[in-house]
Amino acid sequence: KALELHESVVGRSLRQQPQKTCKAVENLNYSLLTSQCKGPNYTVQRCCVPLKQLICPILHQFNDLSTPCAEMFFCNANYLGRFPLGLFSRLCIEGKEGLDCRKILGLI
Image (cartoon, rainbow, N blue to C red; front, side, top):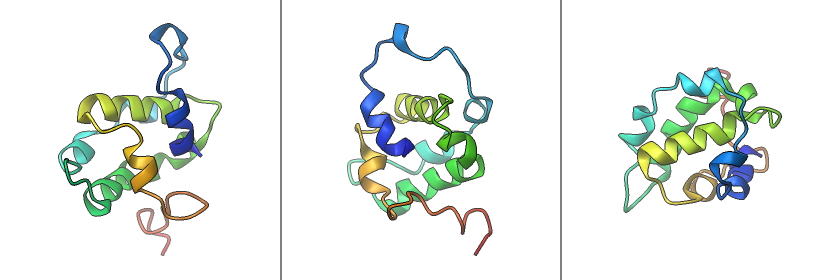
């Protein structure tokens, strides 16, 4: 849900951005993602695996659409990594439920 939502809100101006914060997203080490996910040949292994390593531990906050966590995550990631618009929503598709975090969270 959050990956799809991101593409619909990217064009908003700064005045329209939510004023809430999301501590879980603010404290992430984005270098895990930006150091591995590099173009021009973006791959699932180099982009989606580190994306999941960042998102899965904060999945509940990330998927809570009443918070700005997903939007803040993608704004920060895109600012720091200069990723093409919609890269993760196109590349990191794992099914109708979104990203499968069971392996990252040690559930399988």
